[in-house]
Image (cartoon, rainbow, N blue to C red; front, side, top):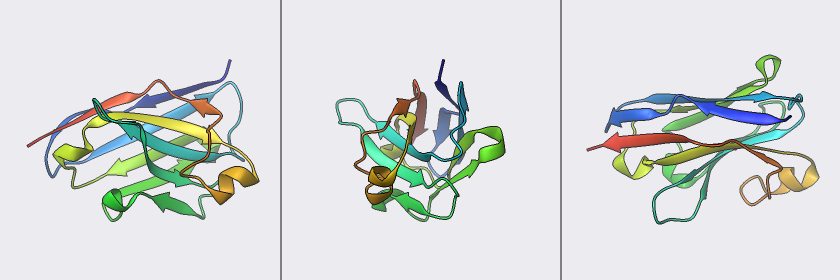
Length: 126
């Protein structure tokens, strides 16, 4: 059974940091693109960041550039999201996802991802 399991969420004050992890099991995702999305209450899910299979290309939404860093460790089948200088507007449930192929490469933000985690809550207090 394929699973993506997020961890590392929690409550932090504005300006603080959190590191999210997403561990995959059931298959190797070393050749999959990986992404992070988030959904705040009453809002649609939105793209946050993505990384290609090699880690050589990364993608971010504008509001998190220079604050968030996505990385991956293929040996551990895990992707990370380092979040610094957190703001109250970053409060959301964060989901990790995995996608594959040229369609993913052409649009990591808009791709219909193949696998999703269950989410982890991030709350940033002001």
